Length: 171
Image (tube, rainbow, N blue to C red):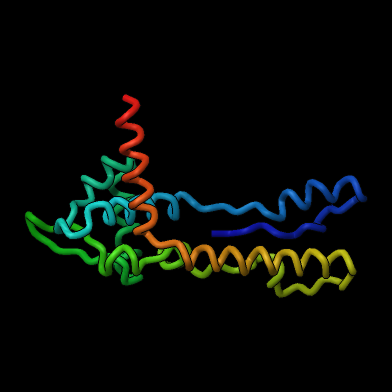
């Protein structure tokens, strides 16, 4: 996950600040992160039913299988999934879904979540505007980490099941 935050880059005047504030709160999750989250949610939905083959996950979540296999290796190295070989082999969660947070998954796939622009090594001249944005960004960053650590895969699985029932009801 990366969060862009150089609110004063290219700053021209008061009118330009609006676009910088808008960009301040931009958060991007890579394809790796998105597909990895989908795979873990798929495993959570099947938790307790034994290993799930990557081909099944790939088909259900519309993820290229070769790419999914690479992601599953990262998730396994991160201690989030276990794999087993053989005809009945596949992947399963290493812990119950209620013990796996979004933060766990994102860091396993993307590396550390960090405040990339305000932690840069190149120091900027301190100005009141930079200090204000730095404080705001620090709050956004802290809240983002808090949310990622508080949301579990179990919550997403429950929401998925609820939405699935609603969609089936309307069909």
